[in-house]
Length: 249
Image (cartoon, rainbow, N blue to C red):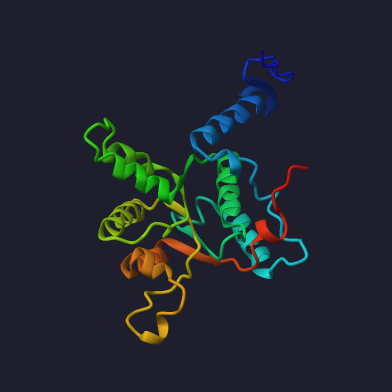
């Protein structure tokens, strides 16, 4: 049995004095309950439920200064939402383990709790897999039903963009998602492990280099991201390997 709020005694409203008269206003418990519902509907994975801007660590010994800059950018983004951001999102780039997903989830959590936004978290690979599965004749869920909440989410966190092997179908699906949200001026927060560069091309000297974001999603869509997102580069060592290794302790 949940505890009764000591402020409003379960009514959900509290009476305050305003200009010499009594006015009913939503109690903090009602606001907290709404925030909890919105966060639950955002489908943030349990592994990342603890992630917040407050818990984003930039002070460990090997921390790169870009992490501090990214954290400050994230906080300013939340404070300016939605008037100053005006539908513009963020593209968080960097190698594995530098905290991109933590920061993206922290932004989403803050937008919900501080700015009253609604949002949705999706792993890029899981989203593509769900769309592919909708083509199975035994699956009653259609592609449009899967993509509708992705298109319409006020704030979408798309994690690990480019993680799937690039094919024409993958490129078309990515283009459909990004173009729809771009045209509707909806805020998209993206993380990727790939450098924000165009395709490497056919130059033999470049073939030994690591793949770029342009290789994984196509240069046309990478160019579109420059219009819809501010790029935030995060550098450093793998935090999970160097600082937060798993143990039974």
